[in-house]
Image (cartoon, rainbow, N blue to C red; front, side, top):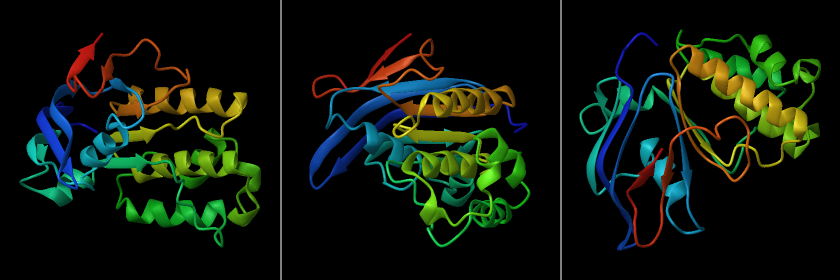
Length: 215
């Protein structure tokens, strides 16, 4: 993660089904920085994360990570992004170790954590050989977080990452995010739960004002 530029979002807009969901969203997240996205249900929080991930095309605006502009080189942009959505997207027939070995290979040398290191960080090392169908919802959420660690992405996009986590899981989540940011990683998260990002800048989305950034 040697590039100095962070995430740059300028005049971002998005329409879905003919309805404008996002309008003139502008902010920046520096290397090592974080942003918490808040707002009522239907304000566009999850849509914003999907747009930032390159999964939902913006109707206008500019997105760039470390100088990689989404519109100019989508592959280079997406390689720097990891998304943890509402669905942890865990393959139930695999073990945690197998899942992370796959994603380590997918990272193509960008990984900053080994599978065993990532599993230890989220408290799943002792369950590394257990098929994922036997994991609880909270444990699957932890595994999804470990998957981000081995992906080697600069920007982590987290949609309510605390859902399903117990007190120990929340503590580990905060520690993993601090570790990611300490190496220059960036975080954009939607959340209603405190897990270590309470003092970070907030972007509040709402029906009337979709560009309110407050420190």
